[in-house]
Amino acid sequence: MTKIKKTISDIIGKNNWIDGKDAQKYYRDWLNINGTIPMGVAFPANTNDVSEIVKVCSHENIEIIPQGGNTGLVGASVPSQGKSIIVSFEKMHKIIKLDVDSGLMVVEAGVILADVHAALNETNLEFPMHLGSEGSARIGGLVATNAGGNQAFRFGMMTDLVLGLEVVLPDGQVFEGVREVQKDNSGYQLRSLFCGSEGTLGLITKVVLKLVPKSTNVETGLVGFKDLNTAVKFCRDFSCQFHNFLMAIEFFTDFGVDLILKLSTDNDFPVKDRASIYVLFELGATSSLLDIRKPLIDYLSSNLVSSELVDCIVANSESQRRKIWFFREEQPEGQRLIGEQIKNDISVPIGSIEEFITRAIKICSEVNPNLRINYFGHMGDGNIHFNISPPEGNAAFTEKERGLSQKIAALANEMNGSFAAEHGIGRTKKVIYNELRGEAERDLRLKIKKSIDNQNIFNKGVIN
Image 1 (cartoon, rainbow, N blue to C red):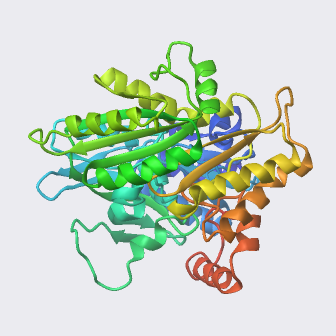
Image 2: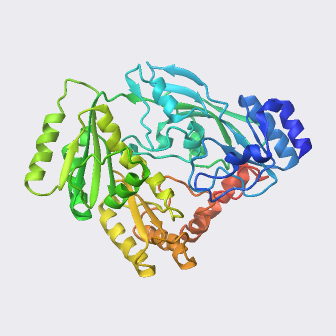
Image 3: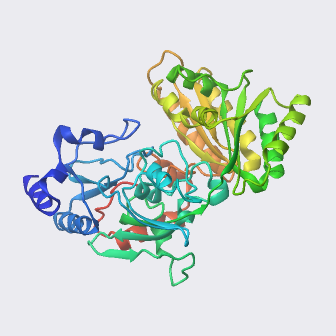
C-alpha cells in the first residue's frame, strides 16, 4: 500500500490522497449498506491525473472505483474489496464553457448538479435534470448511472441530455468525444455506451450538456385524492389537457407525508384536508404572455365540484412552491430515517401503474401484513419507487421479507416493465438482473465489458 500511495501521491500531490479513517465517508454508500475499506482515495485535478492513476492501477492490477457525489442507491460507487482505490472527482468541478447561442455547457465530471442550475440563473436556458439529491450529485455520476429525475418523461434521461463525453479508458488512453454539436452521426454513438455503464467501462472526465429554453412562467400544485384509482384517472386526463406545458407530474402517499412531518417539524403540509394519495404537478411556459394559471384553476375547480379531488392548492409564491416540492423530494430521506428498507426502483407501462401497485401491496401483505410500504415516484413515465420498511418496532427484516425484492422485480418483469428504472444495477441488483434478463443479453454485456476492460479493473463486480 505504501508504494501505491507514494506513486499516486507523486502524480496528484500528497494532499490529494487520503486513507484510513480520513476516507470513511467515501467508502460507505448513502444507505450505509455497501462498502469496505480501500487502499485509499485519490482526488485528481484534471484528465491527465486520472489517466496516470489508471496506468498505475492497471500495471499493479488494482481495482478503481470512480465516485461522484456518492448518492447512488445500488452500491456502485463504493468498494467491495480492499485491493482497490476510489477515484473521487470532487476536485474536478470546473464549468469549462457556457455557450448560450448553441444551447450547451461543457463541464468537468465533478461539477454538482445544483451548480449547473445556478450557473444558468442569469440566462434564458436551463438544464432539465432535477432530483432530490441535486445538491450533492455530480454530473459524471449522473451520466454513469443514466439518471432520470422528475422531467425525464418530457426531456429524456441523462443519455438524451449528453452531447459529448471525454472518458479515460482502462489502459489510460483518453477517448476524446467532447462534441459541441446537436447532430453527430459519425459512426457508433460511443457516448451512449458510457451513459449507464456505472463506471465499469471508463472514467468520465468531461461532459457536454444539452440545455433547453427556461420556463419562466411556472405553476406548481398539489392535489389530494381518496384513492389510487382516482389519482391515476386524474393524471391521465390532466396530462392530455396540459400536455404542452407539463413539466412534472409526481405522486406520493399520506404515509409518506407522515414520514416527512416527523423529519421536519418546521414544514406544515400545504394541503388542508389530508387524503390517501397526492399528485404534484408543475406546468411551465417559456413566455409570460401565455396565461396558464386561469385555465389551470378552472380545471381544478371543476374537478373539486365533481368530488374527484379531496383538496388542492396552487402555489402563490416561490416559498410555497418549494414547500410543495419538499414533501416529494424528501421521501427517500424520510424513509431512510425510520430504519432498514428494501428499495425497489420499478417502471411499468403508464397504464399499468395502478395494477402494479395493487399487486405489489398484495405480495407484501402475504409475507407480512404489518410491513410499512411507501410508494412514490414519477407518474409521467411509470417510474414507481416501491419502498418497504419493517413493521413498527422492528429494526430489521426477516430473511423471508428480504426476498420481497426478487418478487417485486419479477412482477415488474411480468408486466413488461423494469426492475431498474433509473437507479441502475450496481452490486445490489446483480442477482435479479441475471435471473430476469435473457442469456443473449448477458453474453453481449460480458463481451462489451471484456473487450474494453479485459483486466476488469473498473468497478469489478458492478453490473457484471
